[in-house]
Length: 495
Image (tube, rainbow, N blue to C red):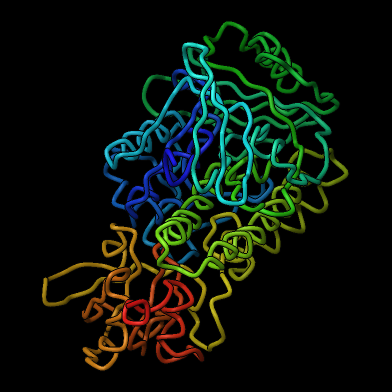
């Protein structure tokens, strides 16, 4: 075998997965057809949950200063994301090109073998592994083999098509334009403005004088383009909707996209898995696509690594589909709903007005903000009454023998963490057989208040992806059962 895992695609999902695998000590080859990054920035910024995910790997300092905000929307109706329980706000101004450069640098530092200019042509799942046919930069073809192949190669995924994944859904009904321009003054339309002719958005992109615009013109038929549209086509649509001439602006890059919505029926077929846009495509409402792909990779990475290393039960890999497929379904639902609200004509205005009234209730705002931010995601981790079971672990300041730390900092190595919050030697002894895969940390909460879901908690088991797998009191499974389920048999049993 040439590697333990072959990843097709060096976008955000593929690069994140490569780094997560390397954190777990698994060798990985990333095949990317393009010889260089495109420099395009389809995704812009991060949801609150992705900010948390990057923080739990110590990545935020690599991105420098970011414009963050609690201002958001659902289908163009303003929503205050400040109602969410997080130490982070969403980032609004980080181009995808910057994100990809950061992730690639991180993955390479960890030892990922990223091969640009290498195209995956075909592959065969032999039952024992995957044999891949690859064309290199010089045109020569050769084979690579690995126990697993993961397709992170986008909405037109070669891996998805070649493996025969079903990809049901709805085709695009309209075409929209996106462009980064400068040399023209535009009023900010940060969450979009609905006009009789369509919807337009405009927002500054930080330094450099660039502005991101999106143009959705009513009646624009979907087209299958082989190259980006000319900027003059975008400017003409903008003028028809707004009456403003922007044809004299400089365009950094231009793209067209549609509102097709599709999701694979399974995220794994044998030794082939999918993540990111390979598994789900949708209207880019709320900038959720890239963020969901990154979170797919964080969910998959530690599980795939544990199965490859032989420390976890093989069935752990099935939880990837079990957990992420419902997240994808939820993504399809909310982006379709936002598309109806945002891109329909005046006949939808009464619905927008009613939703605007409902959003004034904090419970409604919290529900919609949680849906778009990714903070509502709860996995099935076993029965129990603890309010955090299956949810992501909130940031918790801690004080222990080694001084101050936090639940977020403890996740930097991408290992499981058992937090002993009451200095319970018996608890630590019961977990000792898993100390090769989890970190057992005794510490006291700092600054915990009675309204925290962690109030009264004596211990928490956190998975490498940051989700709570067990807590005491409140879990109906005992600790060894939870450890066995998520991290495999005790090393004493394996011995």
